[in-house]
Every structure is written in structure tokens, then in C-alpha cells.
Image (tube, one colour):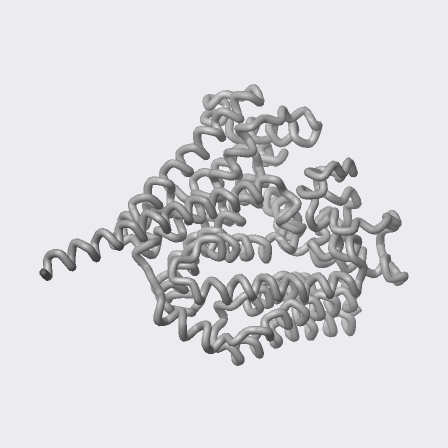
Length: 449
């Protein structure tokens, strides 16, 4: 077991190593291949190191390493030196601090809060329920979903769409805001809707996804100014504070799932530990177990032999649009991997779906194609003075990287709607900014004459 775990850790470090080689080649970590490698180094190394005694199949980590290399290979077709040089010349910052984007930010954020409240009303709750008994009400809401008594409605879906858009625009506006007070206001409003979701519905994934979207918006602003680095020193303290707040919110959400009556602190800690371990680490061990079974090796669980998905588990929403009636469980996979009382979960990463869709070799080929397309998008974004579509694609690319430890981001209908709306908003903002720029230029020419 120890030897296999050490091999898996070495392969995880190789994921980081190949990302570092790409960084040496292009000169920055702010690059799709580097970002994907950093995400998957984190998704593999920390679960492996923290739970060192939990057995893992190193071949599964090896497959993840091959996929990360395949994704990086998609970047080889482009002249990055010229692209970064052009971006440095054509960078534009005023477009992301416009009055239009400010207005859109407030509209999306307030609409998200309104629709969240309306969804609670549809489910039979009142605001009083959550103000005076948050734990019991959140637990009751979660039980509606588990028992499949949840009433599907338009408010629920649109509240999440507006939540994502508010976080993205908040990230764009954050770095453009001159005052510290306004930046704090943007942070609070950006994360208020996903925090409400986490506390009232005990769903934590949207909060972390919004954090990634917010960060993606900040990166877009940096790219537009030619500052190609991942972190600013002055924001490290803010990120640390956000991390503490996220842990507190996640703890409250966990407690709301049936632990609200536990009074002893030590007992509560022992109950929370498996929840945090499962949420942060179970994905790798579950995928490892399934990967072992799929390749005829020893596994803890016996998994069903399913026919090829041909893209269903990667692009579920478009398949459903086209009339595919295959039904997937609410968690996509209904086999629950477990390791004693420490790990329990049905999260198998996007790579289980990728293999079931296209096979092992086809999955690696998919990563090469995805790498090429996403690097092409990044290349186009660097060379465009007024990007819109490519900016939206970059933002959702980071969301895709983050959710890949759970499932493919492209299985949800709301993601396509949010992407389209963001593209439209950025395109309108582009037109307005261009028009105002031409008017300003004409005014200056007239004054000079």
C-alpha cells in the first residue's frame, strides 16, 4: 500500500512538473495548461498526502497525469510570444469598469436574491423559518431534494444563473474599483447569493464555483492590463480571510444536515471530520476504485458494466436537448464509495464519465482536442482588443477546471444559459464602450481645432 501511495504521489508531482515546464516555456502561470495542471495537482496531491494511509490505485493517478499532458499538448500549435506581445500593446482596462457592467452587476445580484426567496416560497418555506430556525429549515429543504419532493420551478434555475453572473461581473469590477470600501461592497454582494444557497439549501458547491468565477473575472482584468500573474501580494490576506469564511459557511451547511442537535463540541468535531474529508478527498479514491474495476484490477466495489455513453456523461444537457431519454441519478453515479467511517461519496471526477463516453484512448484524445480549443480561445483573447466571446469562454473554462473533480461542467443546462448571457452582456458593453470612445475622440479632435 505504501509503495503504491508513493508512486501516486510521485505522479501527482509530475502533474505539477509538466505544468511548470509549460510555465517555463510561455513565461507565466496564467495559462490554460498551467491552470489545469495546478488544479489537478491540488485535486490529487492533497488527498493523497493528507490521507496517506488510505489505499489508492496508482494507475488511476497515472491516467490523470497522461490527461494533463494531453491537455497541455493542445497549446503547442500557437505562437505565444507574439500573442503575449500583442496583448501587452492592445490591453484595455476601461471596458471592465463601465457604468453598464456596474448596473448589470447589481441587477444580476439582486435578481439572484429575489429568485432565491421566491424559490423558498414555492417549496413551502417562509423567511421567518430560516431567520428563527436556520438549521431545521435547511435540513427540511435538503430532505425535500433527497426524497425527490422538490418542486421544480423557474426561480430555482434562474437564481443560480444570476448568482454565477453576479460573481463573474463582481470579479471584473473588483480590480477596477478605486476605493477599498467599494471593493468590499462588491465582494459582499458577489458572494451573498451563493452564501444564502449554502446556508438555506446546504449546497456548498455553488459557493466554491462562484469563488472560481470571481477569481476568473479578476484574472481577465489582469490579462487586459498585461499583468500575467495569478496573485497580487495585496490580495493574499483577502484570500486567506475568504478561506476562513468559506470553512465556517461549509461547517454550518454540514451541521444543518442532521447535526444541529449535537451539543458536545468533541462529538460535533468527530462528526464534521468525515464530512470535510469526504467532500475534499473522496473523489480521488472513488475514481481510483472505479478505474481499478474498469481495468480488471482489484476494487472495493463492484460497478455495473454500462454501454458507451458517446458523450452523454460529458455533454448531458445537449444530449437531452436532442431527445436522449437516458436517466441519470441526481448525483450522476449512484454507487457510493466508502472507506470505513472516514470517506463516503459518489463523486468520481469527470474522468469516469470521460472514459465511459469515449474509452481510455478516446478520453486522452478528447483532452488533446479540448486543450487545442481552449488554448485557441486564449490565443484569440490575447490578440483581441475588445474580446467578448473569448472572455466568456475563459471564465467558464476555469469553472470547467474546478468542477472536473466532481463531474463535467457541461452537463448542466444553466451553464449554457449563463455563458450565453455573459457573452451578450460583454458584447453590449463592448459596443457601448466603443461608441463612447469614438464620441470622446471626436470631441477631442473638435476641441483641438
